View 1 (cartoon, rainbow, N blue to C red):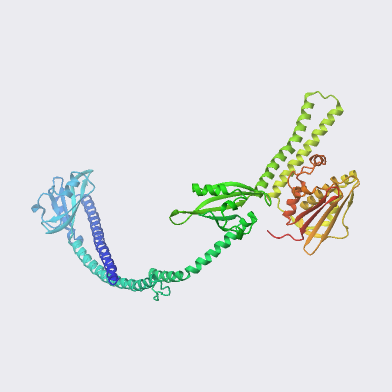
View 2: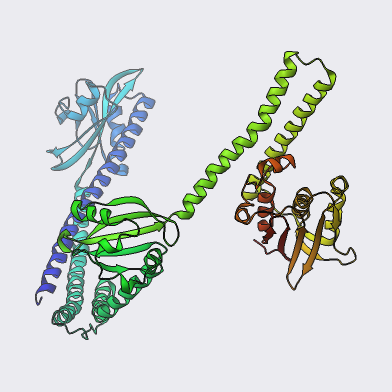
Length: 593
């Protein structure tokens, strides 16, 4: 640890040195290429200018005139110009006497132009006449569409070499200064890192000796600061560890105790080690009488013993549906699985029981609903089909019989239409696809309006209908059409299931925030065992009687859903042969949803 700062500083030092060297060579090469490209472009531009002047002055054929023209460019441009013919013989040169110059046909830049007919030729080489490196660029000299020679421009690279030398010196100085600064910074950084690390190592050593009161007192920044705070948090966490374990055990106990599903744990010796309150309720025994008992004794209630034995022997999960008939019938979905200790060694069996009695009951209700729908649809469809086929066969010639058959077909089709409409309305209500159009309703006036609608049925059955006092207004917030449907259905049922000359009484009561609608009749009543099911779809106490009354078996189910959509409730009291009382409780004001 004492030399950790040196290793960190050395690593930074080497990395920075490598980066600086790479950066040095990269910048040097980049700038040298930039200088070279700029020089080449300059030579090409001047060569193009000279070529155009030679062609424009038509001095190519006159060597003296051409030499005089070329020498004019020596001082202002400070660039060498050379003109050669197609054989490489020098015709003019801005710095030397062309008579004393060698043939230039073997020069690469000249050959590229004269032989390969390229756009321009380029070459960089040492010049024996100038005694330093030169860059040469040659362009073809074209007269009347034919190449008659070449114009070569050249420039000393001594300027570029001098610039590069100055660049290398500047780069060396700047990068060297950067290197020194980086080396000092890396040393300081390494020391700032290792100093708190020494303190952290001391604290961890004390923690290893169970001294949980030790803390890192320095406050460094960055990741080391995070590490210091983590070490301090670790020390505090270790102090709280035993307390948290106890709290976690208490939480686990609370969770298991409040689970709806029953949970039981069987030890590897076959005795009950743990169970929750739900399991106590399922077994109808207190856990004090069960914990410590062998599983054979406990498993008698739901016949779990064979399944527990299977898990112990096969070390595999078991999923079964089990039944209990005492003190009441229960259907349980049982999940049994082994649980393991360290090294995946089996330590016992976990049993979880889910009460699915209500689920099975709902499944039966769903099955009954499908059967009832099929039965209700089959009867009118069969009647319509049978009587229509009879009429179509032509066997019925009597007009009275024909009208009777047609009336039956009409009545059955109306019944089928009512059934389908009720099913659709019930489905929409349940899916909340029929939103309430809330307004303030006078329930007293609405009850009297509904009684007018039922006047024909009332007179037919000679029923006495008692209504609330019309002078006493009673208001609530609701959907008028839905409330009308509730009243119409309940009052209509009271009339239908009351013998001729019977009485149906409708009354309204209110308190601070609720309104009660009470429909009471002295009709045939409902058997006690049927009361819990009268709001189920298609449930009928007497199918023949209900069908004769024209009902579809869905009225009370629709009423129940309409009342619940108004956040109300419906209750029923009845004695067979004595009459029935429906009580609808509705809030005066609907809550915003």
